[in-house]
Length: 221
Image (cartoon, rainbow, N blue to C red; front, side, top):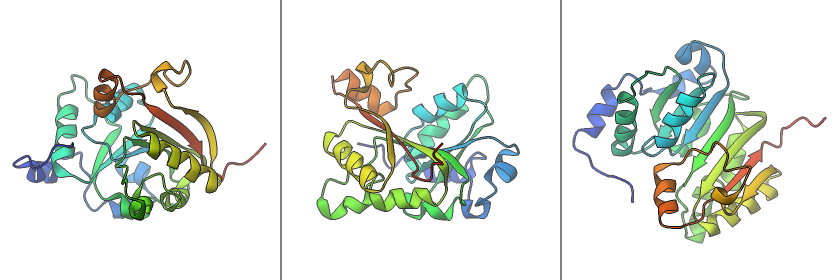
């Protein structure tokens, strides 16, 4: 389960200079107004404690990254990781934000890639639309992903993975790659960065599923 109720976490997040408050004001101008450079914009929704995104931002300094997390105590841990870096990076900012309103943040064609790692499976059928890989959310992502924009999704939940593949196909997204055992896949395992959940599950012998899908706005050759 996720970490909850760290005393002072909300206040620390509120005061941290790398957390963007009132992020709706930057819709359509993230690169210009926040990062002050032109570069691909990648977003992780539900970033957890930041292990994955921090490592990715360190490795890909030519990309602008935004990490979105709705819980202050979890985001606080991500900020601790960022503050502990020996070499500072300037290509990663954070939002405390609920993904339900994700289309309020980005304009058409503004985002190049989305990462969804170990998202809440919302196991009850009546909550299926709340899953971040549901058709409902895929339609939202289409509003701001560039033509040919990519979503990378990882999970240990086989039912959620099957659901996600079905939803992508029904919504007309192109499934570029998929695997039900990421760490034994010779292609997808290359350069894989593990999240804190992934590291725990792999240690327990659990298999990790991954899919990479492409925005149906892709221009075909």
